[in-house]
Amino acid sequence: MAIERLKHLRLAAIKSERPALMRELMLLGCLYIKEPDGVSTVFKRESAGFENAKSEYERLLQAVGISDAYAPPILGLFTRKQKIAKSELFDDSQLEAGIQRADAIISDRERISAIDAEESRINEKLDKLRPWAPLDFPLELSETEHCIIIKGFLPASSDFVSLATEIRVRVPESQMIKASSDRNGAFAILIAMKNNCAKVLETADRYGFRPVFLENIRGSSADNIAVLRKELAALEDEKRGLVSDVRGDAASRSELKLCTDRQLVKKDLTENSEKLLSTYMTVNLEGWFPAEEEKNLLALLRRFACAWEITELSDAEMALRFSGKVGKEGMNAFMPLACRTVFLSLTDERDA
Image (tube, rainbow, N blue to C red; front, side, top):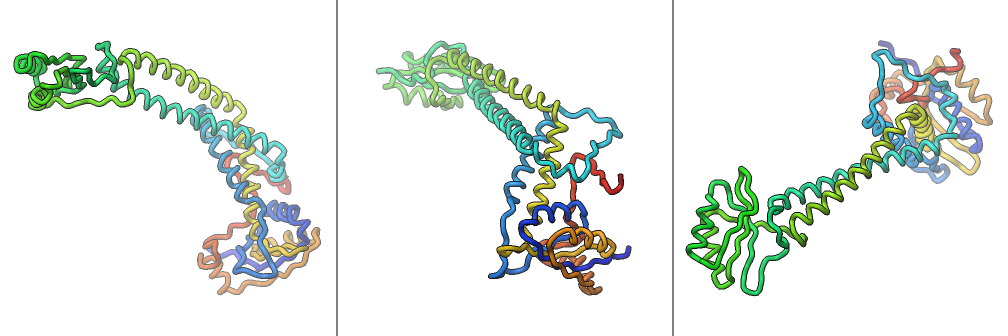
């Protein structure tokens, strides 16, 4: 496949015309603007708001993804994209509202994620509390004046009745109370006089009894479970409302996608604008364009107060341009400043 012939452009324009010039160059879609080399005391690079435009584009794109996840669009196999003229992509009158909507959707999703995490934490706490629900006693209680109270777990490989009997026989003042059991073992409370604690614990240890610690829990298991279930119900109600809001936004998802594509154009425009070098009165750029587009490019440039120099690229320079070894961009293809979209289909007024 033959390599497309390129020409080199150096351009100086009046700074006040930069926005209009860049817009027209983007509509033409044939000029690749080169990243400046080195630092100059004469020229400087000025911000065009690229980082902010990039952040806003990413938020819009994220919001569309969230909307699609919660309310998947119903598309046919041959559903066509909505069409839009290139010039309409520069209408930013609704962008602010679109970005605010996107931020609201993202905020709702972040809150949903936070609720999911909180529900997970509460459910873990409930799992720890449920084995003790049959016993009506304050879980924070670990001792009295004369007794120790140890909550623990006995594996299924050990027999609870045997352990409870042996403890009662060896230390009559002690007692094992089963709270609940499952296939893995039994949850129980060991009560012993403090002066007999060592003998009781030695017996329980031989059966594999291990203490269970419930930190920062006060009151009975049943009371705590009731409180946590109320918290879960409130969180579920809040999450249901948030999900409903996100799904409700899907009704105007096409407008959000339009804003996303318009913001993409703004992002690309500001990124390329920041490649220009400025003086007090001028902006200057260097780049390449296909030789076959020279007529269209010159017609555009003559509408502005600017000066330019166009030169041919040698075969060696052409090969270098396509080798990926030139400039910070690592350019391995000709990627001009041009309108591009993610969600919409572009039409060109010149072809209408």
